[in-house]
Length: 69
Image (cartoon, rainbow, N blue to C red; front, top):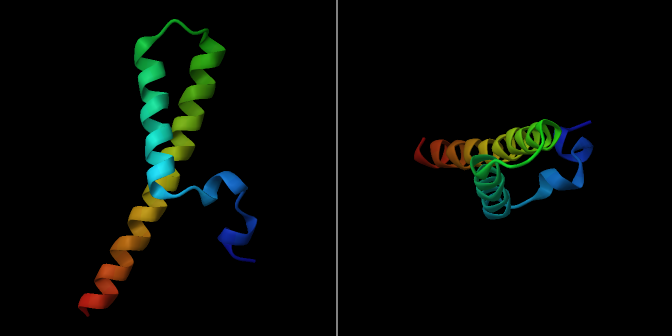
């Protein structure tokens, strides 16, 4: 089974959606004021969103590399 079919719906976010939400997560973490548990949950969400963005970027790079070969 491929990773795409096993991926939760959240991983089907567009690059722009994931990047936008990641920016919001970073802003919330930087502003502070939440509990440790809230901060940890935000951090974990941010890690997930960063991975989604990285997969999009890796895919785009692979397409560019294939096109230039």
